[in-house]
Length: 263
Image 1: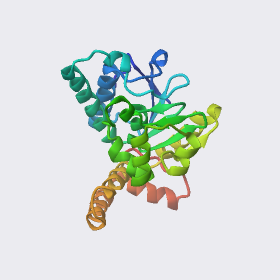
Image 2: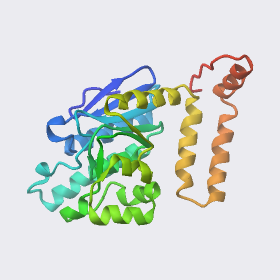
Image 3: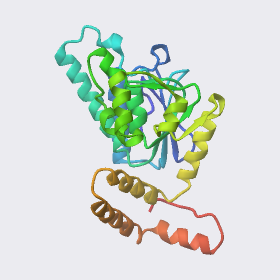
Image 4: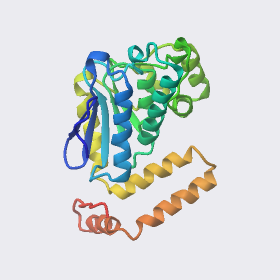
């Protein structure tokens, strides 16, 4: 796994938890072409080989999570250059969405536009009480283009999503939690501690079980309930012959903590 990215700081918290920090604090962690390429590279790599990673934590350096696209870089871009950059962003979003292991957003500050879309693409999010959110694209003559119009209605409902996107109006961390965009509010100094506690709980569970459950839950919002159940059963039955399934049952009966190997 690469760790020498220019715009992302990569750190292994332990053998199974990867902390990914958006690392352009002088630019409010705004997403430039380089960051888009590096996001794509990182998450495509995890799709091919998790290298033992069982949970990813995504956060931002400094006081801002991500201000969205880097509009200074975009100033004067030709239409062709803009679309080329956005194609890279699109692939990065899909790579994040398809990451086989859970990704938790630790929203340490404002998450606007593409930054808010990044939070929505993660599996779930904890936010600092100082965080703020907005999808401001329509105020700039564009619209959300990183799955914002797809993910937001699932999080907050269609009518709320329309209001958020059509006004571009910022909203508080408290509102984000009430509406379902984030799971938990944390004091700023305790955000990473609370996120890491949850990440460690996830990482202690059987990794194949977690990955297949993640996929099954994602499918649930895309298909009817009967076909979703068929996907669930297929995923379930693939776990029956695993070593971890046998280890989990044995450990329960022996009254000890299981030692999962991901096999």
